[in-house]
Image 1: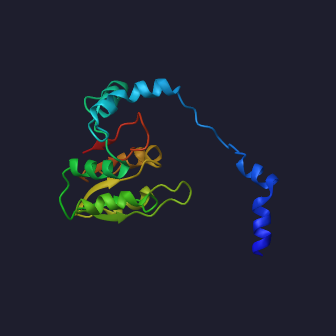
Image 2 (image 1 turned 90 degrees about the vertical axis):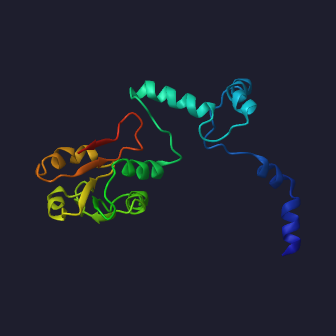
Image 3 (image 1 turned 180 degrees about the horizontal axis):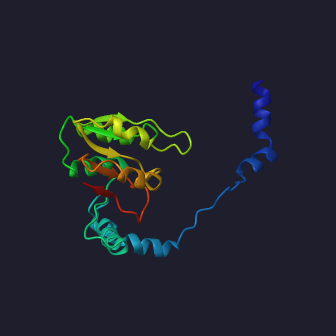
Length: 186
């Protein structure tokens, strides 16, 4: 067996085939000089992480592009969910109605804010929270309803029909869609 492997590796034709690259896709890159010029200020400042010059430049451009007063750039969508829930100043131990049909970060952000997730069953036709089941999940401890971005537009009108006597915050996550604002109705 070892002889066959040596013979196989010494085969010139095989070695030539092994060195040929099959490009499924090819990255589109700017000329190296242009790239070097773009990162020159990062190199000179030696500041590679948050709040560096490129971070601040992107923040300013996004404020203009989105037409907002302020924007915070975060490491990931999970941090955006956690901080957004903190900004709502919900009472610890409160219940947040959400969907089980979501990424784990939705539930993690709720729990890490000292809140309790209450899962509303989904509609089998469109996989959004079944709005006919939300009202019966509301208790005196319920402080928010948190649908996720895949269901926002399909559910918004239905959620807004909940009784006005239900004083809740409706937190709509759209963290993955640039140009769409997170909305909070209180």
